Length: 417
Image (cartoon, rainbow, N blue to C red; front, side, top):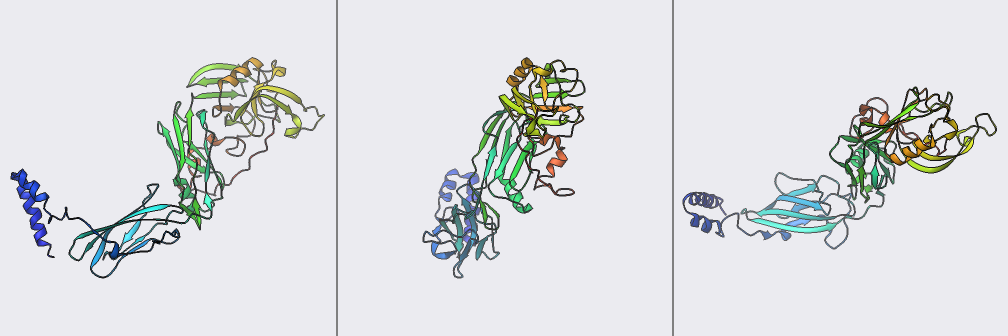
């Protein structure tokens, strides 16, 4: 068939459309118009590598679609899985073959639409579906903390079911872990170790924000014969911005809500040799009663520093046993001197108020102590003690400067007084 008459028909339609509306309708409905020709079934014109007998395709092998014979060609291919992910591919210049360039998802169902044309330019089409075999190893992520309302300092955690050490594989995982905040924030993941990631914004979460976390790993190839699996999404609400600043130099704690001071409390912090850690900590939990024993922090029983006491209104800020708690035995020193074994002590009434005011994720910061700096990882959430530049270096999507990040082990849970 010669293409010239088709071009003339289109031009005729265009001219008629300027002056004769009825003529336009008649022309556009013509069976000879290239836009109204019904596509023929191209099934016999194509060879497909995916099994047609109900067997599941190997996701490690590419999808190939080839035009049979010499009388037609492929003009377009669209392949999409049930999750809406498009499979990238390349079509040869002569239209004889299309081949996927991305790895197929494992355990997925694909819908493929192929457009063709014969030697006369008549359009053809074929739509088919196929499934891929499930992965033998599935990488999943468990997000934390549990759903609920948290303070502005709460990091998001992702615990992977299998270790991922290769940087390229980490980048694939990181792109698939989505954190969305309303209002929006700038944030990033940090690889604490091969199986654990933390996510935090550049600044604290906005008060009142809604945060959703999801994983798009299912079926995604992460590494050599390693594919992603399903991950349960998470939704958090962020409460007021509560910040408690314990000043070891003035022996007072200032508590703010959304930037406004709501209380100033006399406190005592760690004495020499037991100095409270400096830096930003995040409330991990609250315990109405804790039995604190000196032996759990390496103080020998019977020594002058030993203790075994019931402690009330205990707000935990490190896994190694640092709390903000009631210390009625040191009321005379509160606001005057530092006499504790590392915790921030206050009167029972003030401790009860603090206990009722804060929630997990709220900020507790110690300043002007002679103690060590709070660890970034391994002893609670010290994430905010890293600058944003250092935090970004922990992402697999950013070129890191200097030595690679080394993980730290979580300290043993042991209360100190």
